[in-house]
Length: 384
Image 1 (cartoon, rainbow, N blue to C red):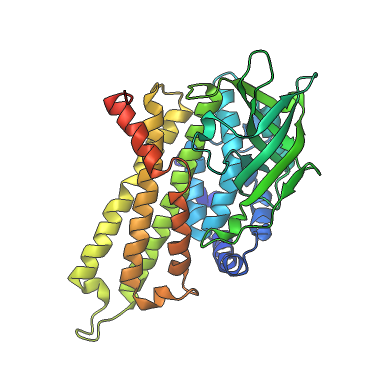
Image 2: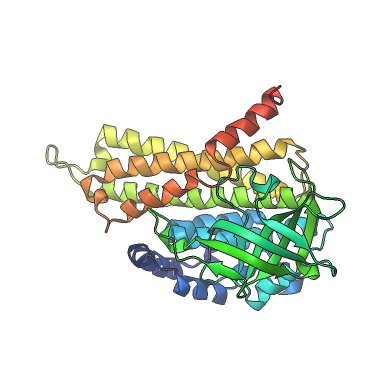
């Protein structure tokens, strides 16, 4: 049976999200109202197995939903993306016989909100290293001290998934992946004042002796490039759901361009701009660019769901599709602005917001340099 995303995200709900998106963008506020509606719809548990109380969807279905959500409220989609990353990693690991993140699945059903605390200023190692200190406790827990940036869901998260470097254990150094609750040991700076994606409220997070209890320490691995399941899980879900968000933005920009071309009329000919050959060529180019991405994302998400083994080729495939999605979305939004004309330059215009929101995609891992480096290594081998 064909999956129908409208059953979870109906049109009237998307309309409300779209109306609110302009307000949250203008006022630089977190979309609490959107999150409440998503919780009520069971959205935070879409990737949790049905036997645990979730919707039991795969990454392929979650991707379609995120594309749909992003077409209405990009910042809402991007912020909830980070929660879905952790529930997605739990599914990826669980499907491969590793039950270390069952507490994430149970927490998502119970209403917990999981944030993604991996990014650090100047740390281009990303998953392969950390400037955050992870000090072991006698009972198997860890104490984390460091600063994380771009922490989406900052005002509302209840559990922060993060990594840090353990340099004191006999088998160290080890990268430690764990979850810490929101306590007095965690400080969220009110520093999110950005060009776009304002509703994500991805503020800087300081952890100052935050404790991850032993049962929330999920992985200890060697630093550096790794095919460990936790690295694959994070990389695959993060890249594919990011690609989904930006593909959803492109879809909406294309729809707005079509609407503008149909609605606007030429003073020269009296005909709608949809009959102008130059405008038709521009919209056609947008459609051709957009049409390439949903099938690519669908194929790769299905491969993750079906446990297809692409070996180390996975990393170039995943970083590549994220890079292509962002590049495509930026191109489509640029073209939509030209089709819509000068009115799109006003901040009250939805395309103006999409124009700013889509730029955030340039800064998410894998950035263009990293994506190209990964692809070069896949095809040419490592640099000598």
